[in-house]
Length: 335
Image (cartoon, rainbow, N blue to C red; front, side, top):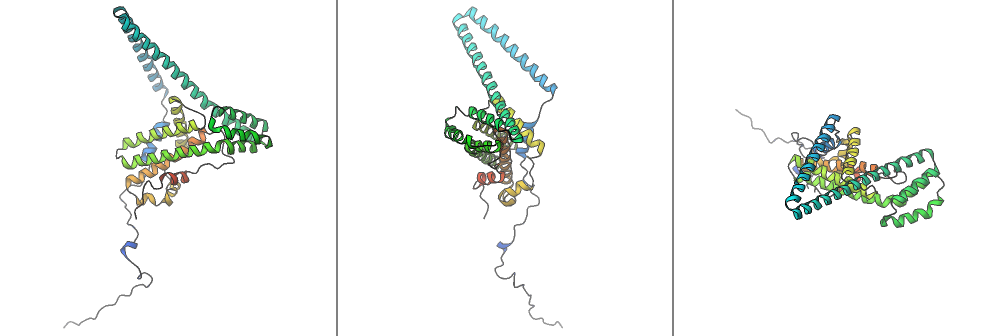
């Protein structure tokens, strides 16, 4: 004979019972989804920083010389033969060829001038570091003269140069003088360079999140970073041509790869909305955010390379603050 049992009472913890609902439970982590690593930016950095060997340089140099010689001889034979048969058309093509050569010479001169401007920025950086290290007031004044000469043709720096000239005599040591030049002359340029970095980070993040092709990610990251570095160089007076931009790109990425700054670490994740945003977003959005953050890191490195003076009075831009300004609102967090 079975014995009837009454209802069983289960005690519930009074602290957890009130207001408890499934909506309050923490999200279940997706253990199978790989963490965002910013692979597009890491691949782009590796490609940009890669240096070819001497054998490869000799091969491509000889191949280019061979092709240029063959094309030149073929064009010469074609034009001379055409002049003999159809003089008017032949001389017209000869004039076009001469115009092409003139334009090519102009391009070469502009590229050489762009590389010279980049070298001028490098010299300014070295002289400023030497003046600060030795507290050389005369050396600092020489740096100011070179800096004013660098921006003499730019109307947007006219008021800042006038302010610097008015207060220059008040500075009695190298650190104060270069700090004044930094605050008066470079602060507006720093703000413009920061806006370029934010725009590039936003663009790379959007491309990564929207375009599903890995190769498109790498091409988009390289293109956006090259444009960003070139515009930063333009802002600071080191206007770079095509070859100069490639040289800057390689220098910046070589430094970043050597120091491991293109790797995603805890500081990178913590700078993105407290480190929780990547885990709450989808895989593509997470990659986009990390690639945008890495682009911001590249931009800050490019700013330091292109800036004529080191950061003394003004603070170096923070990667985390740039990322927050650039990516706020781009990816809406789920509610």
